[in-house]
Amino acid sequence: MNDVQSILLTGYERKAEQSVIEKWMRNGEENGRVKLPQELGIGAIDSYEVRGYPFRSAGTLFRCGNENSLITIYVKRNPARDQDQDLIQLMRIAQRRFAEMFKCEPGGPPQG
Image (cartoon, rainbow, N blue to C red; front, side, top):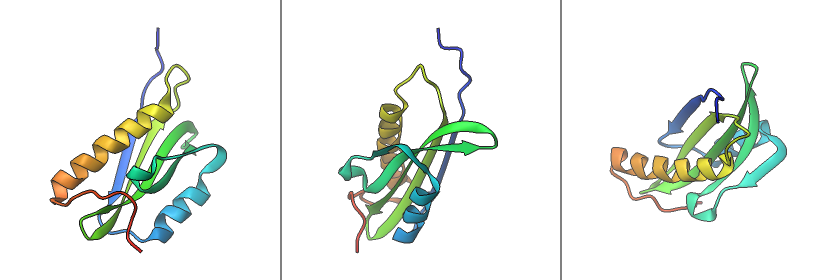
């Protein structure tokens, strides 16, 4: 039985600089860092604490049309799940929905 309460937070920037993802990655704990698959862009999965709660988080800078865009996803840690795989799948869905919402073609790693 999995009776851990779940929390999901998301964010995005339609036009983002590479320095934004670099800062985000510096702020994450390097303990337990997992790189995201290259087709999702530049990013990683890290551990964070938000308002006293432990979170697992994915952030990626990716190309959508002619723009570099950023998506971040935070989920409250749940030891009963493989949250790294969950976050990879959620990021794929988020990028696909982002592309539909902003009418752009997702293209993997950012430009320049």
